[in-house]
Image (cartoon, rainbow, N blue to C red; front, side):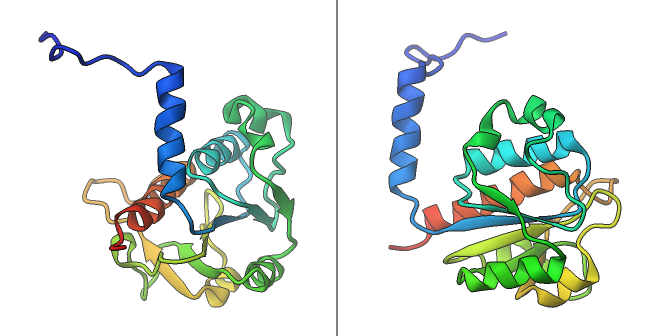
Length: 183
């Protein structure tokens, strides 16, 4: 086991707050999430925690998605469910209409015939990423309402990611694109 270079240490909580404040200053676009029919509370808790980390402005629940005030959501979210405003917006079509009324472009994260790799998706500006249930993904109604569909390229022997992990990857790529865009 090698020793770390001189001066390398883990950041203290104050240093982490300073680092996060610097990244917040570089962030100007609105990113929302539309979560359709994700029913496992622990998946929802993980999604909410990622949403809080990446500065999601609002979470729209659709279909039979588990509400964020479910006690098992809080176990995984570790209190972050209080940091991101959310509401149940009805059906997928109703939720998509609410997203559009907010002036957001709707990008579904799903494997479809016309999906583009996430790194090529139109994630600039104010967007809402849509993810679907654990078993069936994004519904046909939500796919029809989406402005674009993106997929996460995968080279392993598994054909898909857990919905919470896929959401975190999509959020990270959305913010990365904002942070690295030419000024």
